[in-house]
Image (cartoon, rainbow, N blue to C red; front, side, top):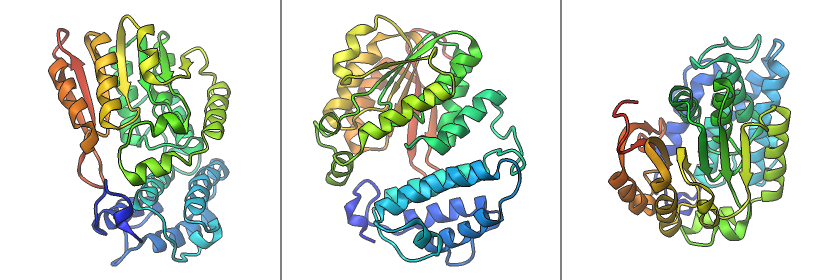
Length: 331
């Protein structure tokens, strides 16, 4: 496995090994000495085969969605993964699959796992879990819960997310808005490979984005919003973020998770963060990327820190929650 193909992780087996150790307890046991990613999938096949209860079919189907995706990226079949056969792809793809599968195995599927594990209202929690099973993306359970908790507490009316992709981080906000009984989230997304790689980040990242099937991802997102009756809370603006900024006079809750190039990330802060009302919330993703450093500095000139989410696999800062200066100093 060539770790040089993903510069964000660096040239180290340690990160992937840690991801395996973090994910393994979701199988119902502690990782054995020398646990490997291949052993994880071999053990996963036994867990899926033994799953029983009313929620088991849905859980198995959701997990297999991520197994199938990983198999496609590794140019093999799902059965080979579940057999524990060796495979190779970029480390981040494997780590994402491990995290997503572990989150699904820990989820409160009826008759499979206990409910109420997040502390959120049941309807909000169930939508987050459903999104994890059906939608692609990288929004962790930790981040999804944080987004929902923040919206439930702050009760924003005008929410904006730059970068929908599959919708994994938009859904927690929409679910919380529905729970609150007011507000809408405006998702800004071009769903275009040309826009995604307009400005460079790193070779591996740009190569991945240039081959994404955006039409399928967009279709699945819209289908999910309709199926989950979230159309009243969700407004989609299909355009590059720079073209949509003028649509907003005041924003209560802003989530910046678009292109991570130096130029685009900084541009999103300049165009949108200044429109957040005093006391409003700004969530900024992937704060540990070198290419987002300028954007982070700009944000710090406008906002006070509220909370920092840390990646449980790498131990690095992952996502910052900030408050626009001029409002309440407490979260």
